[in-house]
Image 1 (cartoon, helix red, strand yellow):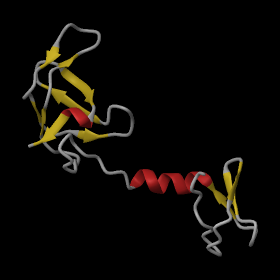
Image 2: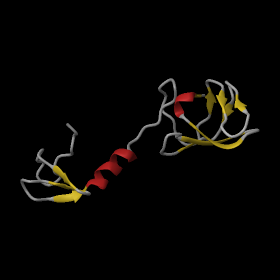
Image 3: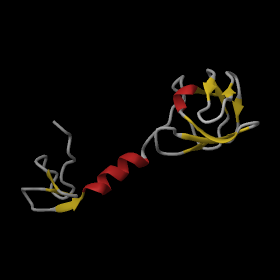
Image 4: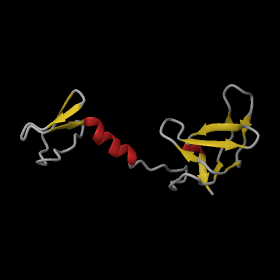
Length: 113
């Protein structure tokens, strides 16, 4: 079963989804489902391969050779990346790597320095 949030008005646990809204059958309160989801996204914590919490501006090191799609290059293990920016998505780190330019990395392939 999916875990729906309790009603913010009466704290009833019997809420249900109706399109883009959550509805409480006990007090008839309706609220947007997107508001509850955005609160979860705001609390997202980004972690590196060792479990350290990452923040914007951190310096990380690549922990394995990464082949680049589209060009024949490889980002070598041990490459330092300074000033990362965290974003939502599959590749959750945006950065610039000397010699390669701007790219996106997955946090599971880096370690915080």
